[in-house]
Image (cartoon, rainbow, N blue to C red; front, side):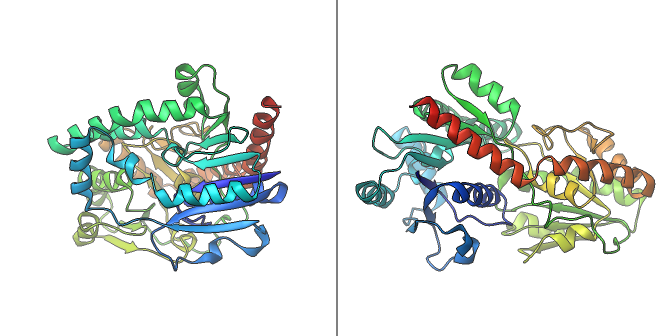
Length: 395
């Protein structure tokens, strides 16, 4: 069978949501003849992120068009009464590329990476599947709930209201929807009772992310994640303001490393705080994780599930997270990680772990065992099973 994947970014084995696309693509390419269409802002973006061993049938890059500045685009969306975010994914060239592909080949299944990408026209006999990395309207609504600026607060509420009916319509019209957790499956099933919804969890490369053999740096805390992503920015700002001073008062030698690409100025400014460093992009996150004593996920905004926690688990790291940070993962607080939602409790939990090698070891062992149940190999099997089930429903 020919399978078409349409993604808003390049697959990559080490870059947040791109990691999910990379590993699902790798699994699908083992069974099907896969063509990949990606939107890219960089015509010279490294193609080694799509390795030759995948043996894709076709691999086509479509450049993102030039858009007005973000705030102008948002204002235009409000004036037009429709989401500027949705409009940004509606690229004429993508439709032209898809028309050309389906004119040459028949595709049994088209997998769109996110509901944002799923608004393109395809033949009626192509089974459409949407891979929901997040429930997008939920992510925007949660951003609205946590936003302090009244203007941004209102805008995120408005965007959520614009996107929700479109997202649900696209998912409802698709022949199948993939989500990352049972929680999201239940949520969407309640709204779309007739839809076929399958859970394909986020995973971790348990061969690449191994129990850290190198010596930990004393009292080192680490946060990992793309700093171009609003929930990650919100998380580190929250931790810096509410938790970091409490930790430093108990352990003056504590250091905190923020590791992730594209940190905005507000995150770069955190490097001025005592003990804090901001790395920006790094070639490989694993050495940074290996040297850490405790990994943190102080997220207050999000949807889907967090790869950062699975990667820390796989390396045997003790983790402290908010409830939302580890949402959707099959974790038990006190067994796999420590869950803390109040800043004082979060800070105290980090301090306790930094002072107890025995507790860190126990959490590391349990976390590594759990990470193995989330290996990308198993997730790859899940996506193939989901595709086959959705195909069979249309025969």
